Length: 216
Image (cartoon, rainbow, N blue to C red; front, side, top):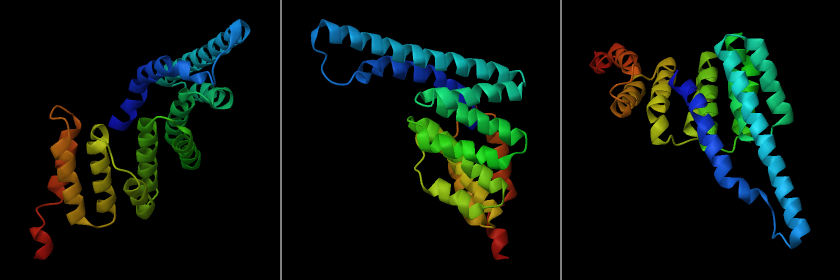
């Protein structure tokens, strides 16, 4: 669940990013009053386009929170179809992956995650997509594929605990207890002391024992 929480938290960050970078959308030097007016009109259109995408994404989140999965999916499809050039499309793709996974359509979930991974501009969104893709591959029993996804990145501090715990899960599924212990211990050392996930992580680590049993 810690991975999913980052999705909603990124909305405000993306709005801030768009506000700070919107001037860079104007290409070239504006010459003359007519060109200046045209540039301002174009930029206003871009802002309106982004704002429409933001509103649509928020509507999608409301419907998703209410359990209206297909209605939320319809909003997400609109975002991908009409607003794929905005940061909200990648977030919508993550949400669509979650919806399809809950419905048991793992192929569709994988497709949406790969879309987000290929098209997201924000590294945080790409990180979430890759972690979820690794989780999906692990659920399908593809430990090699899951590990390949994880080994392709270096997790930043904000994702380190989730990353290491997932790596431990892959190692457990692969029968590599020593590597799993190391990953779980690392995850525990960097996890927020107040996180409710610490208890489950500690249980996973305890279930592996000390390693001395492997030698007996």
